[in-house]
Length: 238
Image (cartoon, rainbow, N blue to C red):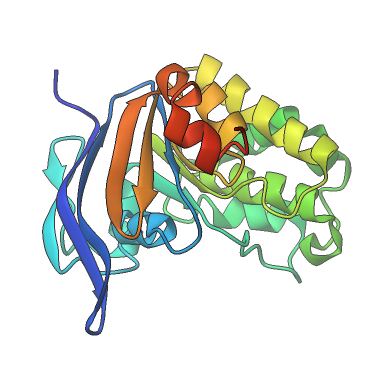
């Protein structure tokens, strides 16, 4: 069975500095796959490359049977790969509803767009209650919900989430993780970068541990949770 996303020997450099050093991984349709690792491991660079924001210096990216190398970001979105970035990057002066509408900028099916906006409100009721409110006035957790909702508006085949719980309170982090679990239950394919390794691996079907631009370990989420190296380095256990 061919994976929905296949990354082979991916290399990404910033000038002479190689940030991603020949990594390979895959994501099957319907899976949640987690990339975990310390800051500077190359996780965000990897996602930015997959979404067309950075150009790889080597390797091959295949999505849904199609090469992605050299495809610009807006066309990557149109192929079904959506990216909810680290730091959220919502449009602060626009309303919640307008931010969601921008997530569907490549679509022309007005009825479908309205249905998907309502789905976002069903997924995140607080957004529906405040739909006319300026996005910049939302809390960090609410902005994260909006960023995820906006990414879903493109009707992705694969949703990439970069540090969705970063800077959030424990209660809000739990809500975000519960939402990811709900999306997984609906069959959404998700590539997840998450600083909370325990939460990420508990959700993940499969995981990859990145270290200084390389993949150090890989395995099922369950296996990585009990791996001694992972427990000591990323879970804070002895």
